[in-house]
Length: 347
Image 1 (tube, rainbow, N blue to C red):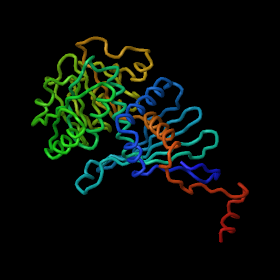
Image 2 (cartoon, rainbow, N blue to C red):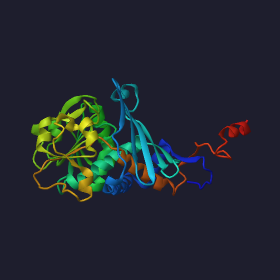
Image 3 (cartoon, one colour):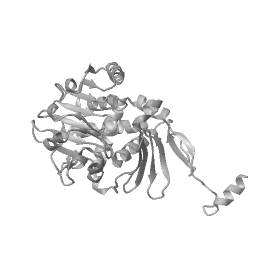
């Protein structure tokens, strides 16, 4: 990124720039390094200012703001979730985010976060599995083969060594798309006609469906002892993927309980049902997987600290490259008190 002394210039990472950055680094390196940033921030979780995301729900979807701040940096993400968008050729999820300097309030990075959210979601899933999945897991069932699926596969291979994938989606075209992409990347891929077939022989089950409804994507009889479940599709009130009985048999880990109890799988449970916060396992305060036969569940809805980590990682990468554009985004008058005079002089 070219050096500049102008106070009005903010680096901007566009969709094109994000793709160039991922391709330059390699997707699995990007995911591995991003996972390291997430773990670092999880270990200092208690020092963050945290709040559940601010959501505006409508019959068609949700628009959310997700803020988080630490001693020197502040971040927020704007993100939507509109499952019907695919009918008109639009993305279900789009996002952008901003990183700012706490000392001055000045933005220091503006970035697309549609692609970056997919990367950070996958990296967070793999971080959770690092502490919760059974040792030696090599096969994962991917239930829901939409936009998130390939990212999940790459992150699980990069961090856990997952090589075999069993795919299922209610839309066969989605499975064909996913299988084609992943086969090119060297995975052993098995398309499956049902959820029951997909989970056979899988030590890890990832559910990543998009419909905004309470659904039983995974029934209790399909989850055997020793399985790790990575549930990432249920992420708003009234939207779940797992049968309630699975939750009652599982050791449940979440990101931020005040948010997950409203939006996650555990919205099906009483508000006092015990869960563990994932950051405590990452920090070594509580054990992750405790036994070979334990069923573990990462009930993930996405949390702002993960976006903070992602923006921080991208900031550190683009500072070494010319990838970022320079936006004339902030007013920079000769006299900070004479903003109107700046307009007059421009005329």
